[in-house]
Image 1 (cartoon, one colour):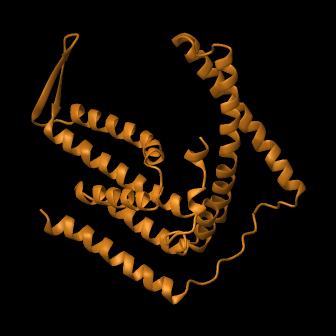
Image 2: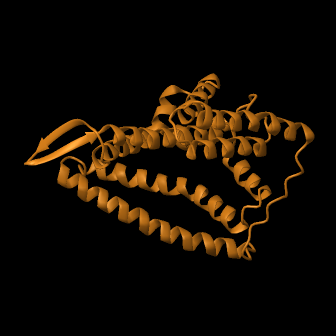
Image 3: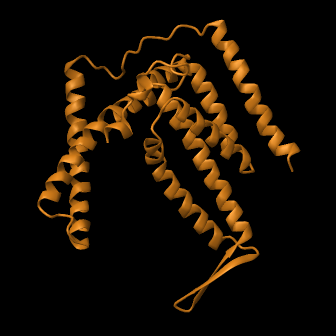
Length: 258
């Protein structure tokens, strides 16, 4: 759990962590936009491969990378299956179940693969960004991009207390296991319901106590963040070096590789 959600790798000293976080945000945003608007699977998969190779070159454990990708991969599988069977087109697989006939189509399969590649590509870019940039630097840089102060403040608080709620959920789950709360399927479902309810109740209580503590410390509706200095010419040059290949790759895929 600690490895999965911590910033320990972002605090290392390497070539990518030393880059200005605003430069990395420019690159990540451009990559995500190109991935989202892509009409073919090549560019999203290319970004996913580049991000994966970059993470491995930084000595990020492969097990940790796949743990973080496990959730998105499950979502991608569900999307591909649903698109395959719900999109009309030329059947490539037919299944019968309780008198119902389901047909997976070629058009649906490719549509699902495109959406799935976008999910994996965008998530991989965000993962790489999180491995080379501490969260507080990302939030700080968002104010430089003129993101509303209330949004950044909310993101800071959500990020901070997500870990407190995870610890609380882990304690409750451990207590339930010692009492055989997950020994059978009915008990498991009941225990999960109790766990979810306890976490929601704790989150509401934590929100109230956090607000009261902030007011006692002088909170008046906004967190004061030190403004970032202007980006240097070298950083702007680096942005100009990174963005054109992304744009060229996108238009090359969309217009030329038909």
